[in-house]
Amino acid sequence: MASNKKYKDAYYPVRTVTDLKDMINSSAELFGDSPAYLIKNVPGGKYVPKSYNQLKADIDAFGTALIDLGLKGKHIAVIGETRYEWMVADLGVANGVGVVVPLDRELPEAELTNLAQRAHLSAIVYSAKVEKRLFKALEKVEGLEYRISMDAEKSEDGILSMKELVEKGRDLVRRGNRQYIDAPIDPDVMSILLYTSGTTGLAKGVMLSHRNIVAEVMNMSMYVKVRRDDISLSVLPIHHTYEFTCNHMTVLYQGGTMAVCEGLKHIVKNMNECHATIMLGVPQIFEVMHAKIWRQAEKSGKADKLRKGLQVAKTLQKFNINVQRKLFKDVHNAFGGHMQLFINGAAGLDPEIIDDFNLMGINMFQGYGLTENSPIVAVFRDRYHHGSGVGPAMPNTEIKIIDPDSDGIGEIAAKDDSVMLGYYEDPESTAEVLRDGWLYTGDYGYIDDEDFLHITGRKKNVIVTKNGKNIFPEEVEYYLLKSKYISEVIVTGEEDEKSGNLIVTAHIVPDMAAVEEDEGKLGEEELRKFFKKQIDDVNDQMSSYKRVKRFVIRKEEFEKTSTRKIKRFGANVGESEDQNK
Image (cartoon, rainbow, N blue to C red; front, side):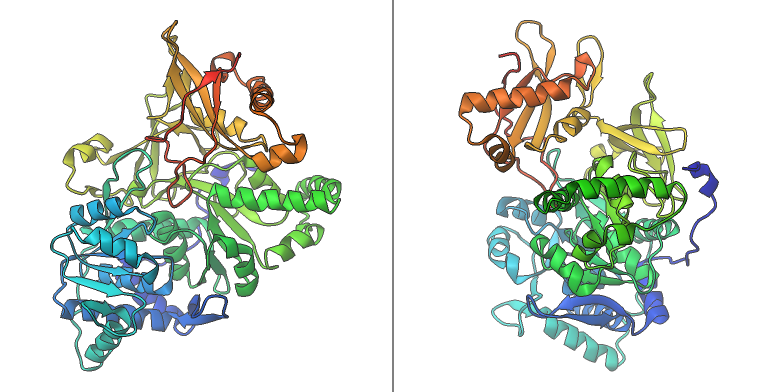
């Protein structure tokens, strides 16, 4: 492909917005009665639209009602599944009331209590699906004035109905109350307090401003075009900046439509129902979809035909001949017949999967970011990308590699308007990562000749051998996960009692269904021999110092965050055994 530098100035045009309120107001003015959301009023029902005008009116009404309750300037949490009401509540708070605190609906009771106290909440907006666990968590929280239900039809027993508040706010606006509508927005103060997923220990409160988010939305829109008739299926937790900023806000900014998925089990069904054209996901989602395509091909005896089709598409691609939708009609029909764009985030995806989807005619690429940068630092463009790496820096973003080694690998630092204000009530942690306007990400990587960023691993994960060699567990894990018999893996460095050196150790969760399908039921010793062979094959592909010397087979999956990332730190990885046994 041509050099990325060729496209340096070929950005999509964008309109300038100063804050999220300005964004919603201008989108309503531009796109009016076009559908902003497609939602289901009952599970399994039909999708019905919510227009841009209605979204703005509902946000204004809810915000007006919150100010009328005396919540101006207060911290208000929102927790629940991805839904239209969640977005109304979130933007209702952020666009003129106070500070919104999005919470992960999968958090355990004790952590909900901890975060509610640390965030100094005055109110919380919640869905019925989290009510029981949430109320137990809130028993020990002081200072909470209001509990607002997204689902209650009426206010009673100390619980306020969001529906009633929206109607009350609508009435106040009709009677001339403009406290909320005319409330000025300071784009540079904290308006969003977002707690990290906690994969590396205690969750930190990331302070984000309106400028952080709208800068990210405008930059993303320079790289990725959303058309007025595009429909993006929302499958990820809405409280994460990846889903909130890069999907919902970016689509609403450009005039597309967001369709709310009913759950991970319903992705393909919902794709078909709403005629989705775009989907943002994480590796586990795309890995499952890719594996399903190949399993179906194997079962139907069409695997060879699929392989040949990919080769033909690859050849024709060199001559700019695109016939993928005809070649892979069955794949497109399975995804609803309209899917055009997949974007992967949260963690790296096997380049082969990305290349396969692209050859099948579904535009696919990935990016890199973190909550502290609202979140995207680098991402490919929809007109130029490939499976390797995570793309160039976002527009108006600077990236530098700190203390690169002989291979050019060092810590990634970023500077742009999307960098967080800091960690809430944690100046020491803030000082560690924010230096002279640069965000030190804690991730290692390098920049190639095309200015594309490549991620090699987390700084905290790196295994340093006695002879000074750096081993990135993520690289070893990548090769291990190529085996269809390995479902999950964590690679660690364990000290050898004799030499004192660190031994590369793999903690494996087998895909027992795949093992039994090909090998039958294996005893414990036979299973160890089988996986020793799998690891030997992987070791042959790597330098000697990176080879796995010990491994352990786990019976249970690792604990994960709501975006399906393994909680590496604090994970019970178990005791290992020598690979040579």
